[in-house]
Length: 275
Image (cartoon, rainbow, N blue to C red; front, side, top):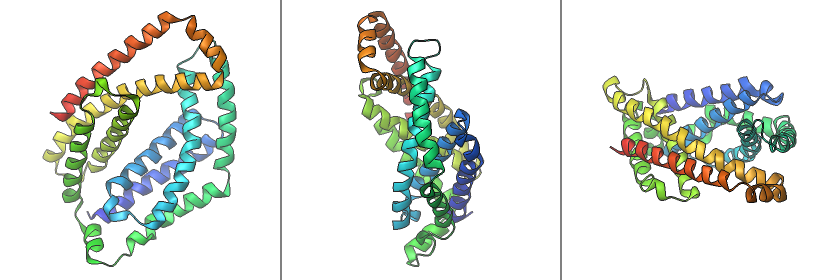
């Protein structure tokens, strides 16, 4: 299969997933929102993976609009996760109120002309964007490269970059750790895109890395959820949260121990990914 064909298939699948979940997401379904965010993350990963082939001015414009949409989706999804992790606690009610406000803003965005222009524009770009018609020999060659050749080379490059980024994970600050998490997601999706495109014996080694990536992503995701929840509580009711923290030293000790444990386990997983 040519890279051009594979890219169109991947992007079409992502956009179909967004379309399938649109009605339920607009009605407030947290699961549909989560699936939509995954679909859009996969979409961005695919575009980054095929970047040399598809980068053009139209994607730059669509990417800016996607950033606007993702901000609305992320604000509501972060609150969904924080609420799930606050069941039965005093702050659950405050988070529910904040979620209602965030969802109203998201719903307005999903029903706007701006959203539909972006969505239709994505379909047009995938099918007939500037990247599809560039006539210079190098662009045409990139579109025609067999998937097995391109994916093998690109996966090896992304894997090497992740191995470098994940060194010293236990001592990293949250910003660097966040970048490791994003790179892990992208490599994970890129490996999943490659199933069926690489020879079975070659894909078998990537399947092992994929298993470790899923575990590493889960651990780093839990750390990120904890940090996002703390930030949300401070923004929702800063005075009450500070008072709560002064009374809850044992809770902070528990959180530090949990963070240390998650980081220790994540570091062990990323060592396996690098081996």
